[in-house]
Image (cartoon, rainbow, N blue to C red; front, side, top):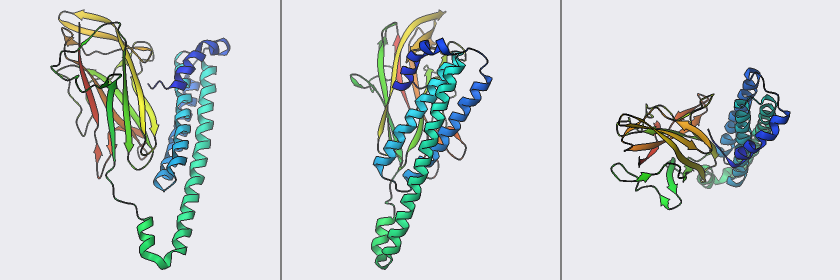
Length: 315
């Protein structure tokens, strides 16, 4: 679950909104969140089409920023819905749907304008066919998405298997991930977080890890992940602020209770004597053909898996 600045602000509004929110059944509300999700996916589809069609990077970046605002509204709706605040959830669901619809319409018109400009330019330049071909032809490039994980001190490259790195309970760790989009168009990105140990199956370049995700400790027991839209050529920073709240010992095996981005999570994965835990960070991207997130990013010709891991010990 992503916690952007706007979503975090929504948490603050949770207390106020409970004053006018009416707790009740969330079955109707969940359909409104589903509608906001569909509107967001449709807006992304149109923005990506405009981006791929030659729209200016500046305009696409503006639309991408609006997509992230709509995403934050939807996340607020989910938070309030989980808390039983139907009225507050409905409010943010509607905000998200309205903004997504506006972005979708703007992106559609932008794509039409760019297409018309290209056709007019080509018509006037038909006599200069070689120059027209050079200008209108896309230059070959190798698409990719790069991911890095950092602490305030820099890259966490030193946190590798076998390295004695101690993470102390109740000490805040301020990490963040940077995701750079070089795919040639705007991307809808999800980073899935998992907790593993020395025997956990690692992800590969074709499939994610089989270990379970990190689960929230209270209903509805959501998995931990972060979503964001990234325009081409730009980098998004995703906060990963975490603390070990407590350690449960079963024989020699240590299990962790974690506070991550302000919410409590746990994992069924333990580690002998608290050694060789590892966070696994998997990159997923939204696939328009399946209308779902899929592991990795679309390469040429197949998808390419992307993941990182950071090893640590507890004492």
